[in-house]
Image (cartoon, rainbow, N blue to C red):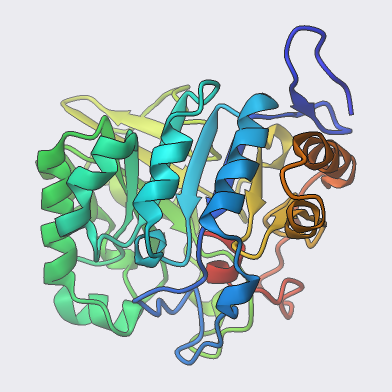
Length: 335
């Protein structure tokens, strides 16, 4: 761990600066997406979840240590009771440049104005299909019409950017990539296509069989659109392309085909308080223990975070043909 003389910043043993925290507030969700969790899930007992006060305290520690961006995730973060109180506290951290949120949009129709008022500047919305029946099969329980109303509410609320996240699965929704981009253009949204993350057991499909690479998606899109490479970034792992006649940006997150570990600038806090140092590894630090054993001790918490930087691995090694090395599902990891 090295410390900058002017600012308290987090640097891991490979010289990478960590300035982005993905904070999960719940593992619960009102959808059951096939790539995220099993249809019948056992969720974390509520007593094991970090309280809103603990989440705010940890968020403050990270912001004072140089983290400039916090993304709130789940599960579905908007099903967490009183989530607006946490967002209000985080949105007012003086060192934070950006508070953003990932959602399935099921609660956005009523929640979008609240989110904007408490300081959320950008929203990512999961949308894997424009066909109601197909959407229902992928999410198992989701109502596409409700999601569309949520998207429209977010558009009318005036967030700085709204981005769609689409997990592409061969023979499930890979034939919709052009239609999804056209939808994004029509609505003035960005869109990112994501290769499925091999986390947790999945008896719904063979991950190797449904794998559809970012390169194949790009080839499909280039039959219709002109994609212009750009160096733009939102602080995450996506590679972005512009379109010549639209404001929409098209991104690709490619954990298999284009490993993004070399420039990793992020860590993840699970809803139970595990600080995960890598999406595809189990290296972690138990911050729940720290905040409950030494309540209110900011320096003790900061030292635990500094120590965690020493075990952040160089990267992940996903293998679609092997059994999952990571047994936690995506909803437990923090999407």
